[in-house]
Amino acid sequence: MSSFSYHWFNSYKKQVSTLFVLFLALIFVSLLSIGIGPVSIGVKDVVLILLDGMGILDPDESKLQYSAIILGIRVPRVIMAIAVGATLAISGAALQGLFRNPLADPTLIGVSSGSAFAAAAVIILGGGLVAILPAFIYSALLPIAAFFGGLAATWLVYLISTKAGKTNVATMLLAGIAINALAAAGIGFLIFTADDLQIRDLTFWTLGSLGSSVWNNVYRAVPFMMIAIIGLPLLSKAMNILLLGESEARHLGIRTERIKKVVITLSALGIGSAVAVSGIIGFVGLVVPHLLRLIIGPDHRFLMPASILLGALLMLASDLFARMVVIPAELPIGIVTSAIGAPFFLWLLMRNRTLSSYL
Image (cartoon, rainbow, N blue to C red):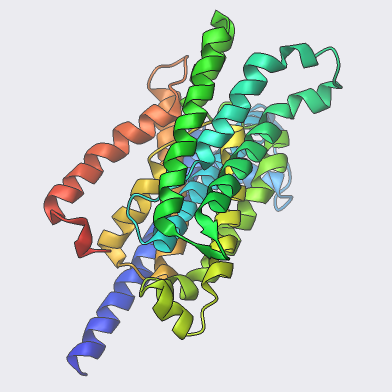
C-alpha cells in the first residue's frame, strides 16, 4: 500500500469512527436527558415507555405517570434541542465553507439579529393585538415574526452585496455587520420603551431557552429546520470544490451563484425557525465546525453530518445542565453553551496555535 493510500485509509477510518462515536453518544445523552429531571426515571423505564409510545409494547399502567412526564414534556424538549443544535451547527459549517472564512456564522450575517429584532417588536409592541387577533394566531405571532425577521435580514444582506448577478463575499460580511448593528440599535430602542415585565421576557429570550418546547412548537418549527438539516449536506461536494476558490469552481462546472443562494436560503430558513422557538443561542454554529475540522479535517462530506451530530449533542448536554444547575429555576441555555464551549475552544486554539492549519 502506497503512503498516499495508507494516509487516505487512516483518514477515512477516523472520519467514519468519529461519526459512529457521535451517533452513539447522541443516543446515550438523549436517553439521559429524558430520564433526568425533578422526577428521575431510569434508562430502562425510559426505553420501555418510549417503546410503549411507539406502540411496540403494550402500555404498562403502573408507569402512566412517568409516561405523561416523558411523552408530554421531556421528549418534545429533547427533539427540539436536537433540531436546534443540529441546525445551528450545520448552518455554521455551510456558511464558513461558503465564505471560506472562519468567522462566518449565522450571527455574523444578521440572521439571528433580524430574528431577535422582529421578536422583540412582538414582545414589546404586540400586547395590543391580544384583543384583536384570535388566540391561536397570537400564540404563533412570536415564532412567525422571528422567522421572517431572520429571512428578511439575510436577503437584505445578500441584495446589498450582489451586483450584476455576482456576490462579493467581503461586502456580504460587512453588510452583515451593519445589519447586526442596526438590529441592535432597534432592540435597544424597544428596550428603552418597555416596562419591567417586558424587559424580563425579552432578556430571557435573547439569552436563549428551550422552555417553550411543547409539541405544538415542535410541529411548527422542526419541519423547517429539517429542510436545512437534510438539504445542506446534499451540497457537500460543491462546497468542497468551492474551497478551491470561486473562479476555480466555475471552471470545474460549479454554478457558484446558485450554490450561494441555496446555502443562504436554507441557512436562513433553519436558523430563523430555530431562533423563533429557542431565542438566540450563540457559539454553537461558530465552534462546532471548528472543533470537527481539528478532528476529521475540512471535507464537507464528513464535516456536515458530524456537525449535525455534535451540534445536537452539545445542545442536549447544555440543556440538561441548564435544567439541573439551579433547580427549581432554569438557567438560560445561551449562557451554558458559551461557558462550556469557549474554554474548550481556547484550549484547542492554544494547542494548534493557528486557524490556517485546518482551514
